[in-house]
Image 1 (cartoon, one colour):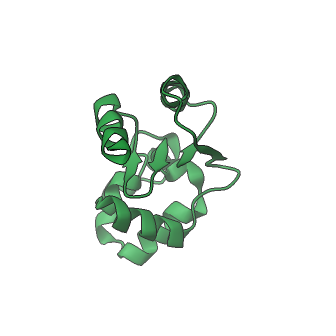
Image 2: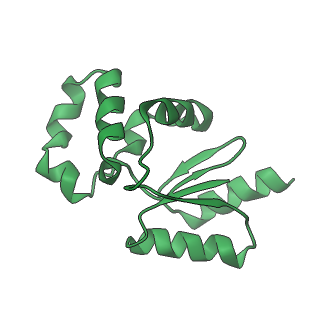
Length: 120
């Protein structure tokens, strides 16, 4: 599994600890030093069956600074992917990418259900 995080983020720290406590093996990736590419985001959206907006860090400072709440509706999907790929701080985190799922943000029940499906 791929665990994409911002190490200073308390939610990412909590999610990482949660994975470690369950002995889940994962590859760790710093979202700012190696932010997701547009191609990765497209593949993750497809694999996870998620709406593109689920990948935006709507509570982030950068999101608010750029006024994206009002601008996203007028942007094409390609423009949104390019924007997300331009700055890891715009991407909702953590992101957990498994063989058959993609999760954004940390919700313990959702993550547990995904791991249960993977292990069954």
